[in-house]
Figure 1 (cartoon, rainbow, N blue to C red):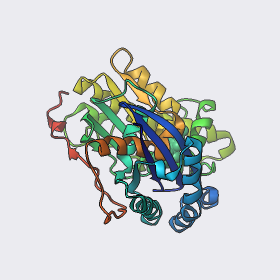
Figure 2: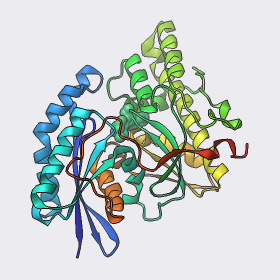
Figure 3: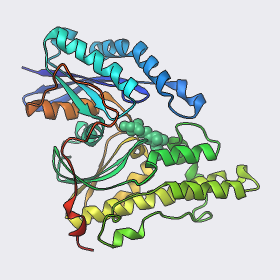
Length: 354
Ligand code: KG4
Ligand code: ZN
């Protein structure tokens, strides 16, 4: 008997639904529908109130479309998963209420899923070989975390950002360069036409990787952003310098991400590293990490549509948790600051060899 899971994701500015079917232990993604809200572009960032309103309008049609593409009706769904946090609470609320209503009216199990655990599971949908143990770099608009993942559900935080998230830095720098929103893809597109080294921006906290301690795998991007701001102000011709600035920023940001991820992978002796979250769409990031770990570890990265926010990754994480018996009750509430399930600060920090 196939078991069908319907997942919903509304944590930020994408309304998404997906159907994941499990047959005899094999999983199959039957559909994933992702509707991006373009209303935020003119504001240069996500406006929470507008995001909630747009989710309200679109969640029903997006779910219906996911069912239609999978060729099933609602009563053939066996369980529901929904992003319960972290994210914009008003946006999360729409998905959680919708999923709760469907689950309770049909009498089927429901599970609230942590958004970042979803990002960690994304590569499993396309890569059968991908499984723990691995080092995971989660880089999105809201988070930058380096995790030791010895097993699913066992997440050891090696380090995270002290200020801006990596994606946030891409977005802010893109705004400084007059490129638009979201900035990550625009910087990635422009950077190859810029000259390497013309702007030699700082690599924040890069040297800390050589010393055991709490800064070893920590990140910081606000100083780098300020350095770009200064260079933009000092430029007498932004048209001429724009691509060089994008190149300089991207090279600096990626070097820190690559070096810390590679160092952790080597130190733990793992054969796999993964990159997840919106910034994992950056193919230069994946290519440089692969180059750095060549002959030592493989780098798992999902395709772009599964790296930015989507319900398929929520289905993948939800299916794993539902199979172990995890369930949410009718009291499931969205939380902007939902704690990462199974996350502990790594005691390995000071024990890892230099
Ligand atoms: O995971 P995500 O879709 O949403 C959050 O949970 O935050 O990540 C969105 C972030 C944005 O900051 C966006 O600029 C960044 O991912 N991003 C990229 C690229 N594509 C998206 N950053 C760098 N290079 C890209 N190609
Ligand atoms: Zn995300």
